Length: 337
Image 1 (cartoon, rainbow, N blue to C red):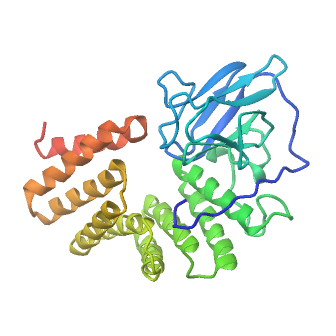
Image 2: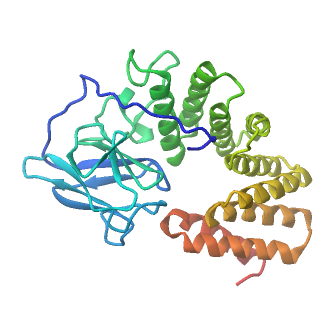
Image 3: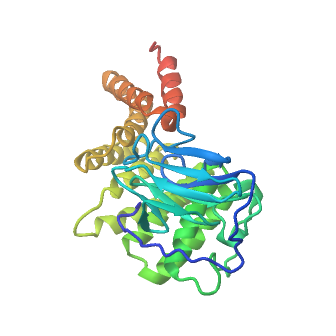
């Protein structure tokens, strides 16, 4: 989990949630993973979940097998999730399963990072226990509202807010994302104190959302506070590299180019030392290339970094296609073919 803190989530079923099967399509919404915010329709019959090109629910995440699991919809509308002898297993609400019926609001985990929310109609689900609504159809969470009802604990609330904030960000609803992450920051500070790594994780997410809304000045403060929390840890987590990267991007947007390059060099070194993926490194390398170009320094290294980023994004498939297009267009402006 982002932030170096593995938070255990408790799933609670609410009495208001409809439990019975329904005919017609069902839906899976990606709450965490490479395709966060994506909604897959699950029609009657069989739907394959995995990395296979022909999978109806195709997930590029680490640890997802080519044919990982399947959902079988019966004529009465009921749905059963079946694990297909996957390497890393299939889970419903935290329990590893082989085959089990699905109910409204069940959380499915496949691989190491992909979590899916199962609904019969994602558009009409209740707002407070709903991760599957499109951001345009929802409102920011009231400050006095509990996402899972009055009996929900801090872990439930925080996990729900984190997922919901990511869905908002994925769909470009920056105001809703910022509001949601602010609420989650309050929840985590209350539970863990202001200097816990779990708080740093939300500070970084809030900073990212503010950057996407072009509020780089406030974002800078949140990224710096997150960095200070991670730097104070005896064992600095891999997530510190992401915070450094976001901080560097913020400084670059504010015109503090020399400071941005120094921070990005640290981010690159930190991520490499922690075995970051090629896509994670590519994100930092592209920003470093743009920073070097702004400074008018080391043209050869600038191009090398951008080419490495382009090639990594090209190999990343659908999850990095937009980034590949962006780097390629940037290189073309510099006269690269």
